[in-house]
Length: 243
View (cartoon, one colour):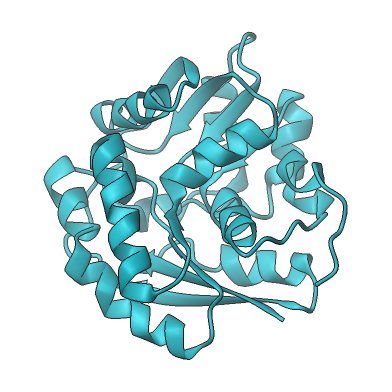
């Protein structure tokens, strides 16, 4: 059994996680601990506080007791808002507190972009434009070219969690650029797990979404590679690896 631990801020799109767990196979367990979101706002000050060491540390012990093999901070904006160096420091602190391999959704996107072989990406964000641009800057620090950034101006994760498949598809279409080799939808509050095949069929390229890459990152940390085509191109890059 491979046990993956995730620290998820508040309540919005967390039902993506049991949905993805069902597609991964019976020997993979997904454990989710909700962290205190503080103020639900896609503003830099609120996001910095949401990902502060104290808020993350509060949920770590529960994951340790559950027997997690790795832990991922399941929040994109609450990690990239710290910048490249700050996000690395955040993950190092999480790893030290947990005593486990650790990462965050922002680094998951970097690793996932490389996994699908993309060099140029487009971003379709639910965030306000200034916050979305910080994600583009983060990817740029990793050597990934961003061809365009579309922000939706949504302030709260709660509102994002109400988005329908039609709204997710519309965001992906608006973000896509002909020169982009993948489209990124960076918000773990956004329900996307059920929509990835439709998104990739519509755009004709890999679509990387926050909860999808977060789960994939947990598997990567645990040295597992699972073939799950219903989760998109990211999950078809490697053959099934038996534990």
